Length: 134
Ligand SMILES: O=c1ccn([C@H]2C[C@H](O)[C@@H](CO)O2)c(=O)[nH]1
Image 1: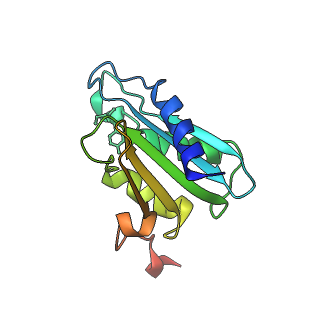
Image 2 (image 1 turned 180 degrees about the horizontal axis):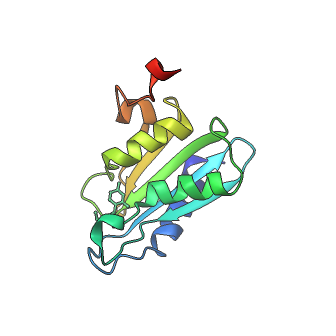
Image 3 (image 1 turned 120 degrees about the horizontal axis):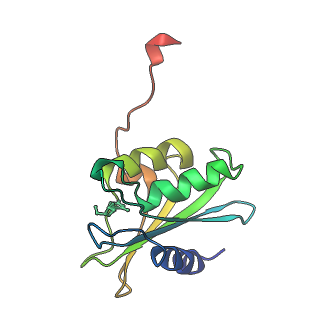
């Protein structure tokens, strides 16, 4: 799948955002190497801290749908920002864990500005779990 097609999927997902508090809608989509696509939007809550970002919604939907870490081919994220949207730190950490540092990530805004990067470039030095406990 082309990155632009995946961005279209992210754009569609953004329209499903549940963002009654911030009114800031974010859409994300992830594709697997075998062509499966999963959508994500931000889902807010009256208890603000319970909000889930679009990126994690998409990644978690994929995992819940049977995708294994390592099967992700690319991700796209879009929001109404001046520059291509910058994912939050929590989402960067989850992207790395599930998609790997090499995961291509296409960031975009509604004006068509794009920034192609990778999960590893978005989060150098990610947390990795408990090596001393193994
Ligand atoms: O990377 C991000 C950062 C924020 N949001 C959402 C969470 C909240 O609903 C709104 C404002 O922070 O944007 C995302 O979906 N992805």
